[in-house]
Length: 92
Image (cartoon, rainbow, N blue to C red; front, side, top):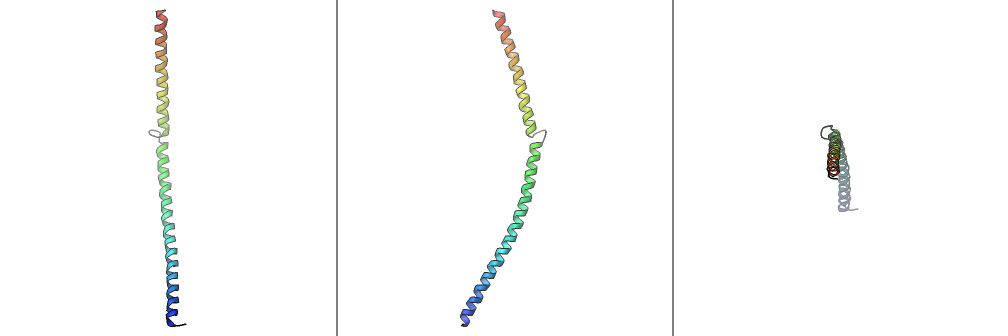
């Protein structure tokens, strides 16, 4: 082998080792990044769940408001039906 060929093989091996080291380092950095992202996502999910479970502004409060409105509408329609029946009965 000539010195040019030896230099070529040495450089090829150096480049290959450099790529391997880079891939390993990037993989570790990505792992750390995804680990912190996972923690952030868990925190955000807990915050969202806490907001949904809030008794003043959460889903329970919305359901209570809808149920109260349904009861109010039922009372109004019953009163209206009673008045209409009373007026129709009085005309006959």
